[in-house]
Every structure is written in C-alpha cells, then in structure tokens.
Image (cartoon, rainbow, N blue to C red):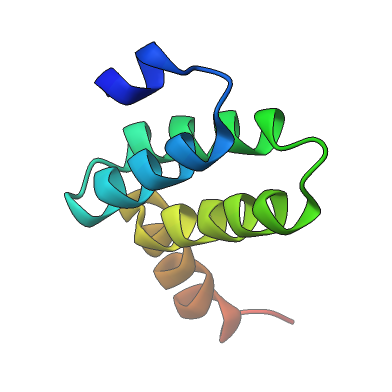
Length: 80
C-alpha cells in the first residue's frame, strides 16, 4: 500500500497491489486497487483492460458471489 501512497497516479502500481491483495485473500482491497487502476489508466487501453478483467477475478473469488451462483443454480430447476 505504501507504493500507492507514494505514486497514487501510477496505474501499474495499483494493478500490482490489487494482484497481491487478491492473492492474499483481501478481496475488498483488491477491488479498490483494480478500480483505482481502471480510473488512472485512462490513456492506456491495455492496462485498463487488465484492471477491469482483474475486477472479474475479484468478483469470482468473492464468497457472496459464489453463494449467489449456488443459489441461482439450485433455483434454476424450479423455474417454469
């Protein structure tokens, strides 16, 4: 987090921080970091792409999302 404080406008640092946070299981920190990277990478389409893709990884690793997917799958047999 210290690097993001020293260079808050540096989008690659936010991506790196997000990856480390996600690997450590800190999904809320990772989400914030990838959101910041997306905002700061306005002129770098490739970096913005990777930051947004990483937000998807955060969502997939979120327990709330996994629970929601499980509920949706369980309820899909009851449709109709």
